[in-house]
Image (cartoon, rainbow, N blue to C red; front, side, top):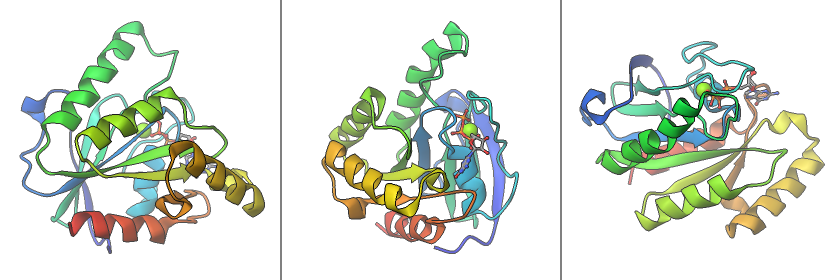
Length: 194
Ligand code: GTP
Ligand code: MG
């Protein structure tokens, strides 16, 4: 898939505020600070279409972007960040689950995992939840630039074995070096053509 145009549409919490599901969409999910917003900026080749921050908990609402007037990208707030207030933490699960449950145009979810961490309870639960609803999930290991190529391959194999999937089903990605950008775009093209 080639991205020619990207535009922020709106932020929302409740389904009544989501944009009409007029285009197919994919959502970007994962732990706080894993690099969801940076991945979107890299895909659309813009430095700051989406706000990013070294402080976890930067994205707190569900953000919708229009791509090529043909698709939506949806940047989800991250989970697992202990320092946000209890109220925000309590809202996260229901907010994201509601989003994932109600969107008839959701073609798939990109689940991002920091290459230096192992998948944990939240990732397994989210994958199970998506599988139960037949929503395709694509795993992206982010911040690949933090490891040598050799260690990247080791981590790829370890993650695939833990998640019970093939290494071919996981993409190594770096927003810094743009490694994996083409692979993610290719997979998105496949998701959207289904
Ligand atoms: P929340 O909105 O808090 O859930 O975080 P997020 O997942 O959207 O992460 P974000 O894109 O804001 O990135 C978090 C931090 O990681 C920022 O300081 C980014 O610059 C940094 N970062 C993101 N991707 C990469 C990468 O590929 N390599 C390196 N080295 N740093 C990255
Ligand atoms: Mg973010």
